[in-house]
Length: 251
Image 1: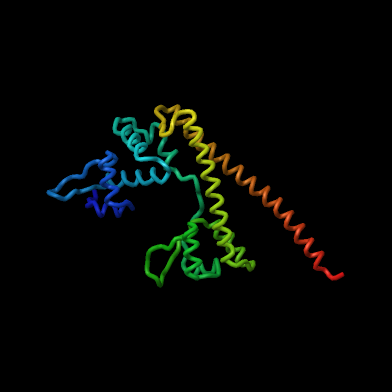
Image 2: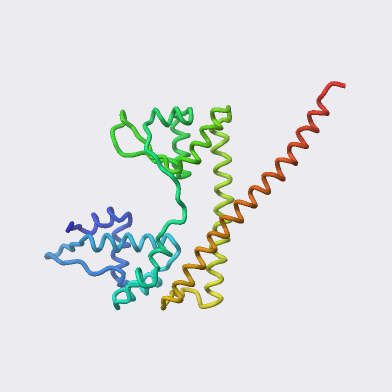
């Protein structure tokens, strides 16, 4: 089993030494082994920190997390018995990925401009893999989206414009996602209370089904609303375009 000093542990877990100490004080992390004045941590601490980070990113507070771990220490095995691991940590998004060379990415999007690559990375579409600069490789994190943008680029659409639209759309969709998830939280708070966690298999099954159905409803309604709005806007702008064309035509 690997051993870590606190600085190394924090770096591996993507957090800070201050957070590590704070989690210890709150009882979220077991105390390290002491070797003289040196605190030694293990893979157990690292995995626990990764779980904490994951839960925090998903909106749980340290009090929620403390309750979660307390239940596990009682022997409740919440992660398995109540299915919280699936509800909380399973990602909802699923996209196909692929690894490509820098040359292949350039051929795909007709660019090797660092500014374009930085924006693609910012939007979570690509990430550069570690390695020598002469053999640079990229992980395409959403091949369907990148390939669709590749087809637009080949039709003459500037990549700058595509990325600008992507950024604006992502901002709007983030607001939609916050609205949907907040509505789920409101349902739980109305029926129980803020900070409530399932205590039985039935309660866990209800929470899991609620979150799953909320996600499905959000995906279906967002998809269908977008298609309806695309149809409506296409018709409006086509009529406007043809009207401008008629006005511009010679008498």
